[in-house]
Image (tube, rainbow, N blue to C red; front, top):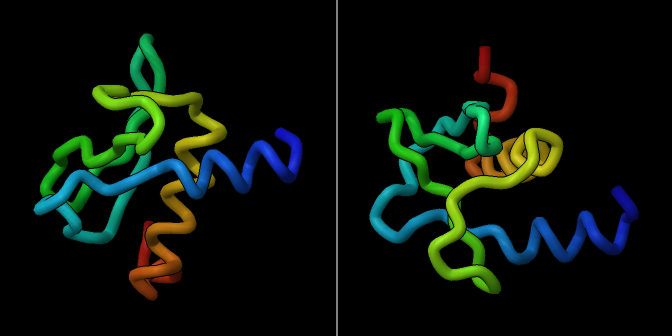
Amino acid sequence: MADLDRARMLDDARITPGFAVPPYSVETYPIGACIVNSQGMNVLRFKSKPGAKFTSPEAAELICAQWNDAADIGEQMP
C-alpha cells in the first residue's frame, strides 16, 4: 500500500460513536476484516463510505494499531 493511500485510509477510518471501548482487535471474515472493541462489537466505519464496516485485513491491522496507539494500550494487546 502506497504511503499516500495508507495516510488517506487511516484518516478516513472512524470509530462508531458510542463504541470507543479499547483495546481493539481485528477479526477476519470471508467478506473482509473489521475492527472490534473490547466488547466484541464491530466499530469500524469510514467517513467517505457511509455504511461500510469491512476492509482488507492489511488495512484493518494498520487502523487497529493506530487506534490502540492513540489509546496508549498498544503494548497491552496479546
